[in-house]
Image 1 (cartoon, rainbow, N blue to C red):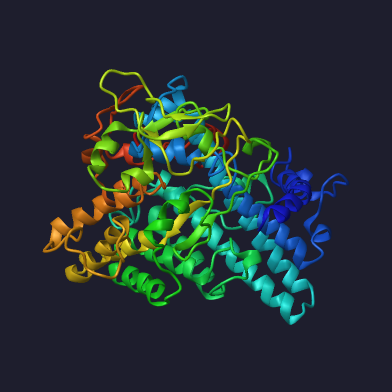
Image 2 (tube, rainbow, N blue to C red; image 1 turned 60 degrees about the vertical axis):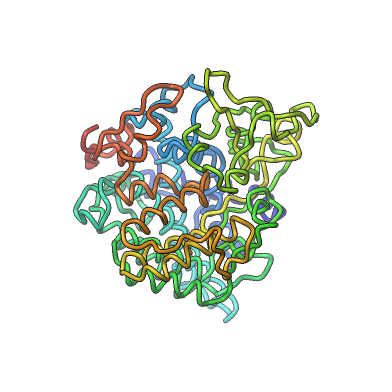
Length: 531
């Protein structure tokens, strides 16, 4: 899915998606039962596997939308809930609520995240229904049949991914704690009337069953690898990696361990050497040997995600001071937390020590992000351009966003091993990640950096802190805190953000409120407990 393919998609898919929206949101049920000459009908529009591929790419594009990884979700939701970032800009109450862990049902950002993820569900459902109908109604060549099957596998993966995010955001407990806790509406078919769209909240366990089912379908169908032209698509090992992660949430450590071993033992992946480590986050080492799945972005002349640009606007929001909107910066407590770990320099830029290129193209020492007394004022380094400003070129940035990489898998594998009492092996996989971070070969013991003699809870806590250092600013931290149910203790170290005090109130602060507009539109929707 290169830039040319995406440009072609933008010209073709928008009319089809508009037709789908008309089908979903017609004014009356009667409207849905008559032929509308201005509406595109999937039965006549979809005439080939190529056209189905465009519909599938519409599902991929929803992941890159303005509400999700094109701009808002990573910095405003995941950084905010976990205190990865602090705020320079404090002028929007919905944003302040998230950073203070005090969301309300009428929070516009929470509504946008809901809309973005359910748009992805809707598009995958639409693709799957049309793909199966097309397969039933047409005589396909062996090549087209095989290609369509692979596409169906991709759609199952994307739907599983969407629901995995949705349930972790709005589900009221983990399935390991309470299978029957309030989850989210589980929709796996295309709605043909308003009544069908009124769906009550399924239990957390039921939603996780669907996620496992989708990822297993993807695991069976998807290829082990794609040609270079399709390298952004998920593989069989992407699905295996996510199944391993899902089983951690289910506390099924044996299954989790086996899926991670399938990825590791495939020998298809390895940690990139330290010399190329930083490049993972700046668009110069994309789809590397460490990557299991990443979102493919590219720069174009359309500056903004909300206007159809192919890049991400995340860099604008987290840009070093003076090089973009620069709304967010690493929380001071996070900077202190790294100590002398070399990954601090991968993740952040130090004021008056590091240099940046400003909006006029001039390289100059980085200024302190905020002038508050005692503030450290570092800037983000991951996912921002280092040799230009997002003001001086386009406002979008073309670096891919990593969703799962081998270092993440190693640390989750270490966690599963620790959970089943294999502490020696767990320590080794944690130490592989540490060795690379310090510039050593991952597989060779290094006394100066290895953690040795750890076991039980002490090892568990070391693995957890290693995940903080290794995966900082990649969007994993909030989900980890939620899964471990330690957010209250962890956020106590941060105490406040610049917009106000952090007020974490378990259990309700572990999940987002169902948006008010959804409560008003769906008579079967139950409000989130405590909101």
